[in-house]
Image (cartoon, rainbow, N blue to C red; front, side, top):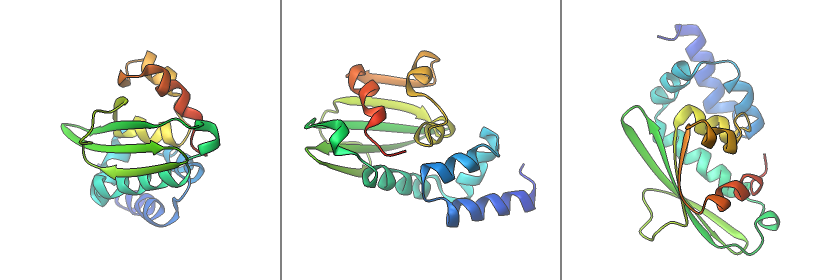
Amino acid sequence: MVDGAAATTLLESLEKEVHTPEQLALLLDQVTDETLVEIIESIGARQVLDRVFATMAERFLPGKAGARDALIQWIITVGEARYPFHLNLKGEECTAASGESLQSPTLGLTIGLPDFLRLVANRLDGTAAFMGGRIAITGDIMLAMAMQSWFQR
């Protein structure tokens, strides 16, 4: 269990002060995976992930992706719970939505919540996560490697 005062401080930071991957990285450096999950579950994992995916879409760098169209299905796990989200890349646009895509994805990624947050905060390398069994990939593995540079960090 997280100490009450520490949890409150971290919770306030996550809700009010974390708006960029850099700010998220600073928070992640202060907590264990267990503490992170506990804090996020107290806020609501879906709410936090909605914000993270919306931020990813906003920080999309179309110049890095070129004219690539892709549907990327993410499954974020927290214990037994699964939170599906997808990113739809079309030309110079990136949109994010919760839920499973109705279309067949170009790429599927399954990752635990703490590792996902570390990945988007640039505290975990995607290739190292895959090689270490921390992220499961289905579909276009080359897309998974390339897309690491498609979002402003």
